[in-house]
Image 1 (cartoon, helix red, strand yellow):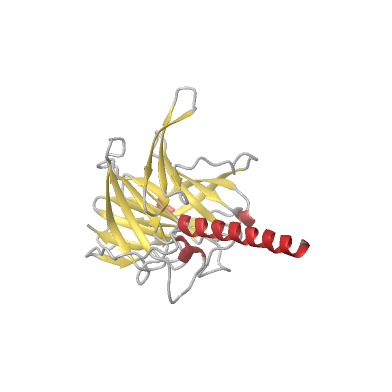
Image 2 (spheres, helix red, strand yellow):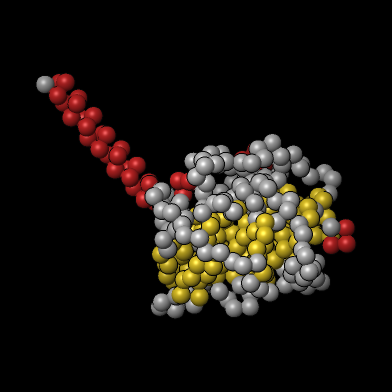
Length: 287
């Protein structure tokens, strides 16, 4: 009787485990394959070989890339090389990526940049706010961009116990984008949820149209369990009129991993599209 009970409990446990694994596979879109949507004038950006997780573009056409992110459990093409910040002038006829020198005193060896945002002061000074994970901790680094020297002056490191409590506008495993409205008391009110058939990552805004560009992962299992013979695919979506009753969602770019693996961000300037990845390369396209 005791053995029968033990076998019954084992069967129930295995059934529950199987149900959880199936749910996880569904959330990771583990069985999804992507059909390529090619753009005619694209080339991989020289000098970006190990990921460009986030991109931000100034109104002047200067694009900043955070490169070399390393996360536990994610593949890396350069596990021993620290991260960095690269710049590209999209107004040049043949723009190229240039690594920005960072001022002395900053710990470059542990630099592990993730998200990046820019701020232009009233005197046109450009500041970079970089989410950093030194030794897999969480900080925000503030830099002043010195254009003439092509360098970054490190101003401050922000540390706080509340930094890992994040607000997710893109819910990657739920395949959703949440639209939130900021209230005068600084509270956030959810206006709507847009459901998508992909794992959504970074979001950027096309300043000329207000459209939303999203770097996506069509198959999350391929992203986390790296196989060079079956690499993770890439996908970029454009969302128009997201506040309307029926937003328009179109695929701008998609690739099965033969060119670009693990797209995480897309950013647009004057019909020039940049696509970054978690740990692979970066793509430059003229639309």
